Length: 223
Image (cartoon, rainbow, N blue to C red):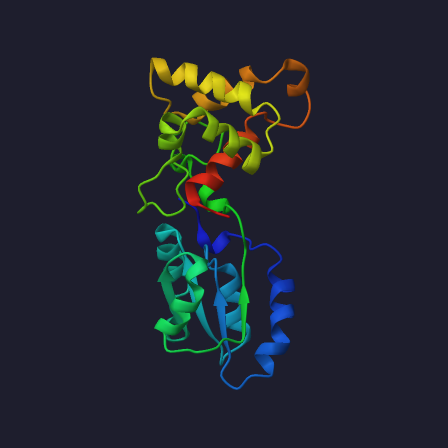
């Protein structure tokens, strides 16, 4: 399990400095941390501004649980909601606010999700093909790989992963899933690697990264 207190938030001090003028010029400031994660940015904000209230949103229930524990000393100034940030207006209203002082968005997959092997976000170690940021939803990467028709898979890999060899990758996927369902990250990564020409595999890092990115975006409806 990841130690949330040891997690280093990206550009934490710079983000706080950018929000500071708005917070300092408001009598009862309210900031929305639209991607609460492990709570590092919010912790720093609450420590620095004693009158500040923060509304923390995250679609990952595990992250919310850990962040809430980390931020327990500020429980009287923290409000959390299990939701996606595209519902920010409804979330803010649910806590009785009609306006906010500012908002912070840290977009993309979180380090916690990448580091937890059983989440299936990484091609570096074996895990079920899950990739759900919100594990209460039903759609997984495995369902996409095993049930989407080939043309749709090609479009996803091209649009969300910019995969030049999308057709070759999908042909390999379709051939493999006809034998048995694909449920393993390592199995999929190896399949993608073998589908891409050897000359191309020599540069640009792991050849599976574009396919995994595309699947993650589709699984979580990120766009």
